[in-house]
Length: 128
Image (cartoon, rainbow, N blue to C red; front, top):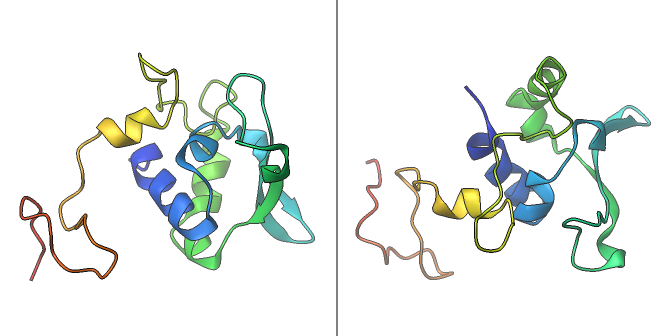
């Protein structure tokens, strides 16, 4: 099942959204403009973007569409609630949804560390 652990990191990486912005998206924040599927990132009282200038419309890259995001989004309307990622719960300490990504297990094959891409975390297995 593709959930926030699958889609949120991809959206952050490919669209430049902050984790908190992604996990607070509503189903209706995905919309079509001039034939292009987009995210609407808005400031919300409970947990909005960092500044008013960060309110924006972000087009979905072709990569997300090829991975099936449009179909997954259509299917999301059959699930209850307004949130696009209802499985992303808020953290106990800070109330932020982004804590669910940080506290989740890191998928194998990911290397954390230096910006040069050198292997600095020996706990991660990299497939050969």
